[in-house]
Image (cartoon, rainbow, N blue to C red; front, side):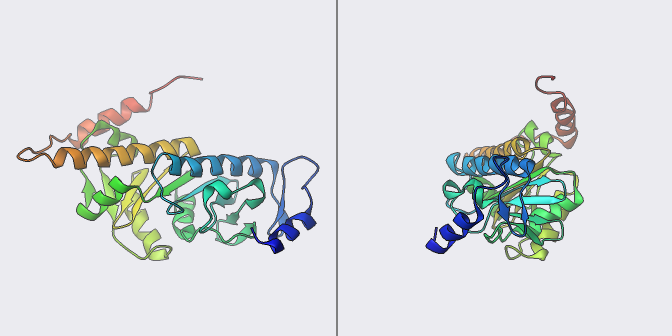
Length: 243
């Protein structure tokens, strides 16, 4: 952090008397946004600790009303604090923070504008990226593909941070909650940060499983049918505890 930024933060003061709101980007973050930011930072740090991200090579977003909180560009997640809350509106205008938002804002906003996503996770996970280089679609190697809506497609390559990449991603996401990005990485979304993260972890695991099984000399991996994946998806909807 630069001395100038320290002085700017000191001049702003502690916020709204303990409610967690921080004066940034022309308005104060609400208490709900402050809580969402804390959860977003925890999820971003988890992508690093679980090996899905190296350095700052991924990004996370969470929607609060018409504001999308996003990780800032090029800032290591372990350095982010409550004062770094960064957010844009659905048109991409920055409404919170003085850090530059992730370069992948177009991709995140495309998901938030066209789906019921509450959160989006994007990584450059090794096995997912490897599959994106090799195949047009991740084969149905495991029934957990059903949790993502079926066979996971690979979005055609486009330069990162562009509207072209966002458009390619949306085509690959049709009827899915996750996709691979050719020679780039992977993206998943969910109703919550936990769900979006869990889908990313499952996608990376399935890619690793495919690469492992397909590397055995003289053997061809057995695959599920789309009907079998759909049956699994139906059962997965009722999985877990009821509250």
